[in-house]
Image (cartoon, helix red, strand yellow):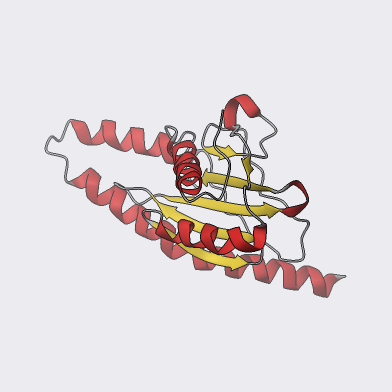
Amino acid sequence: GAKSLYYECKKRWDFLCDRKASVRKSAQYLIGALMSLPSVKLKPIAFLFIALLASHCIFIPSRDRSAERGLFWCPPLPNCASTESWIPYLHGVDPFVLKMPLDEAWPIIVATVEEMERTEIEESYEGYIYAKAYSRVFHFIDFFEVLAIPERNQLSVRSSSMLGITDFWVNYRRVERLREALIQKGVIEGTN
C-alpha cells in the first residue's frame, strides 16, 4: 500500500542523493576544463558541445536484490554495450561463455573487475557485480554490471554511460577489455 510506496520512494531518493556527489564532481571537472581554454572564442563552442553531449540522457540504475535476475536495459542511445541487448546492432556484445565451473570462476571475475582501470565495485553479491567506472579526462560515470547465468554457463555483462547521447564506444571497449582479461586467465572461451 501507501507505506510500501513511501519506503520505495525513500530508498530511490537515498540512492539518488548518494549519486549527487559523483555528478557534482564530474560537473566540476567539466567547468574547470572549460575555463582553462586559452581562447575566449572557443569557450561558447566548447560549452555548447559539452551541454549537447551531457544534457539528453541521465540514467541512474538502482538494483534490488529481490528483483528478477537480469541486467538493466540499455536506453535507445549509442552509449551502452550489453550481452542482453534488445537492439543488437546498437548495443550488442557477444556472450561470455565460461570454461570453468562458476564457483571457481567467480572469485577470478571479481578480482578482474577490481583490477580494471578507474573502476570501483559498489556492490557485489553471489553472481552479481555492480561497479562504477570513471572516464579518463572528465571523470564521467559509467555503470558496469556482471551477472552470472549458471543455467547457461555464461556471464551477462553491461556497461552504460550515465550522461550523454553517445560514449564514442568507450563502454564497448570496456566490455571487450574484460573479455580479453578473462580469456587470458582461462575463465571464458575465446571468440571465433
